[in-house]
Figure 1 (cartoon, rainbow, N blue to C red):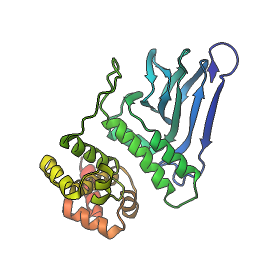
Figure 2 (cartoon, one colour):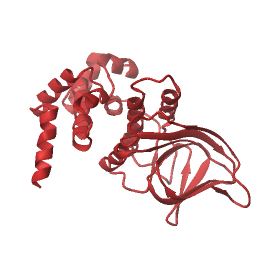
Figure 3 (spheres, rainbow, N blue to C red):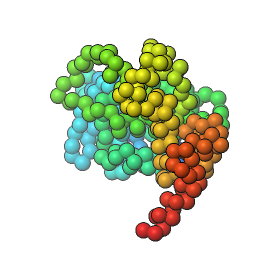
Figure 4 (cartoon, rainbow, N blue to C red):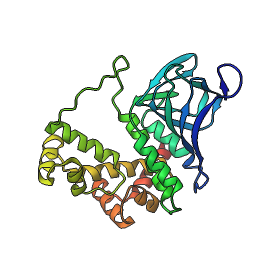
Length: 293
């Protein structure tokens, strides 16, 4: 940690260390906070031991990695992966402020690999402050058995949105007007279902959120995508389940809970209908295929 010139950096920071992780090998929320640096703020790390997720809430800053300097500004979100060192610092005339979360664990590494986030510094124009608020509320709230699951899902949601967000035009940040057409609404509904994939979500929830009747919503969705909103939500859930079965050693009960099924039997029935075999049989089949290679 350093400063342009002598002495230590001067800034206001809200920082929390999280020490309630139950399975740190799989997923570990290390820390989170909000930072208001001054113009002299600079952080330099020779090696980064955690995956860092930050969102610029105001101003301008810079990230330097392997001799390349990248400008980040209000509305930019970036992931700095574990590994080699980097520096970041404020613009002297317009210092940035940001929220941040640091995590590590095999699940985080698998998400980054699965979604193709292979650059050391990965930047998208995306506002994740609502996720930060939910992480803070969950981490600092009452101790609940499902807190770690909620934190894991929130971090996964950020990584998923980062991976699927359209790259920002770095030459022009002027907001284009949003025109509410049937196609735009249906696309927004689709993206929202993907974002809430592992949560319980009803057509009534969607109808209220997007201000459209359930029947019209389903008619438009079926016309564009060939399946209903509830079918698409189930498809997303089961794709998530397939990923966990392939990439983790989580129990069937844990996966069922993680993707939002009320119990194991409902999960098993839905998986059987889609894949023609139980989750256990699917996992055994995968292991058998891997052993034959």
